[in-house]
Length: 349
Image (cartoon, rainbow, N blue to C red; front, side, top):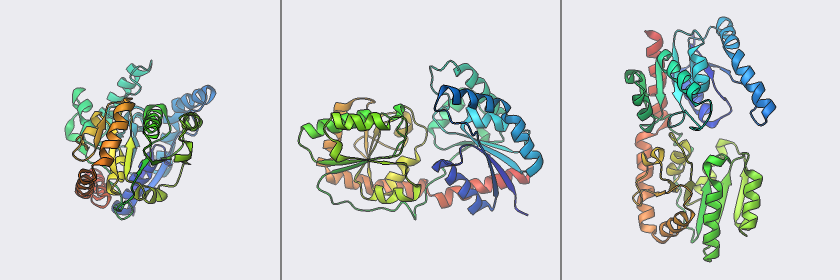
């Protein structure tokens, strides 16, 4: 008889889909999902979401009584992870998604989030850190590190395959959600500088978010709108082709845990140009296998893009090294088998 898992989290996210797909494929698990239904795109909806969250433990316990899952897994230690801790399940695995999950740091809810995160860590039988950078905050607050599995879910290397781009211009891609913390405006301004210098380029911005119209207006203002493509939200299955058509991957978040987007780009031979923060420093060494850019330093971003394009030998060495690194450390087939086996071990105990 198949073992059942109740997944608490946003089931539409590519990250969550990878996690659940891997557990079905390599652990033969049956997955049941539960997530909050109210969006958070307005004050009224945010209030509804908070109300829904307040009553969520009752809904989740009802599902557990009726569906009888063998274990509960949840993403984000400060939201769904806390709900997993309250679920009453005998086996719980939670995943920290960001560097700390305590975000934003200036939030009035920060002390409350800190409290519920600590409770979630205490109740969990297994804690996922998708990369080493996530363990720093865990150790700092005294998490039992014997419960922590440091391993990325990995990516499907049969989909995200390398491709050689022989273009004589910068063909850059950004695949992060169009939210303020990903600093797409800084990226556009850097390309505005390239345009002023007469450097040819194309820039593909994948995804959707609250800043879409603002960014389209900014591209027009910078007179680069004919060189910037906004694709909107696309299925994850279409992403490999877009990455393979690009030669430079750009990501400028102000905070980062482990970026599947960066790993996907590295697998497809895109040269990474990313923000100089702890989450990216785990994977990238400046001018060795990519570029690390000071947050919001548009002059530096523009100059490093020029440097990377004017040094094709260095860039080509980096993309070969990056693909090898991904194969050795972020292979979905290997990593998800390890995770699924660990779940079975927990259940057998």
